[in-house]
Length: 216
Image 1 (cartoon, rainbow, N blue to C red):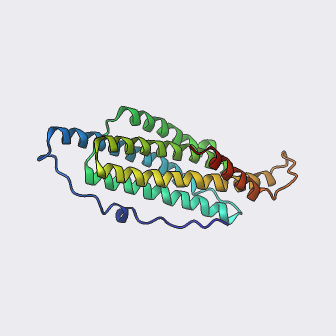
Image 2: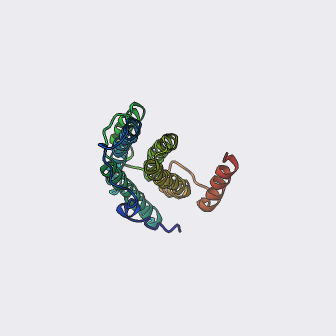
Image 3: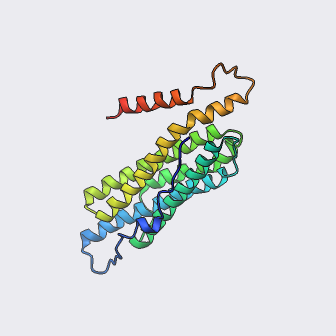
């Protein structure tokens, strides 16, 4: 059984943030500040969309304790991610304005609204939707980290690294728990003549090997 441990409080993780003021900034510093603050505002929107969907997923229960614990863990981790983004936004100052990530925010907003309606009967399919949402967040934090490095903004880099690590971790955890979710559902479906239900560990090893072999 996988043990899901909490990853810490968002406000503790963000204690490094320093208070900012734009009145003493140079023109270049103000441009950098606006660029990063635009990203912060839109990441808060992305995080909020996902967290709303995760709230609804708490209603899904399974007879398997590992699956129930996983759903709770994913919810709690996303909630922490949202709080971390909000804390960064408050410390940094933000206005939503990045056209690339705003488009992603609009897209995810529509997707998040559909998750509960479309996947009410299947934990595995709900996790599949979560997987897509977490990857969108992970690549958004990747973009912010790259932007922050190019602009030499240390606060943005640290915040983006924390977000990327959070969602890259969740993606890997779904890779691990998905075989169990699928098998549990197949066992209760007479339309699938399952021949062997003892394949979860083998599937997990196979998935891990594929990701390791294809890593750049």
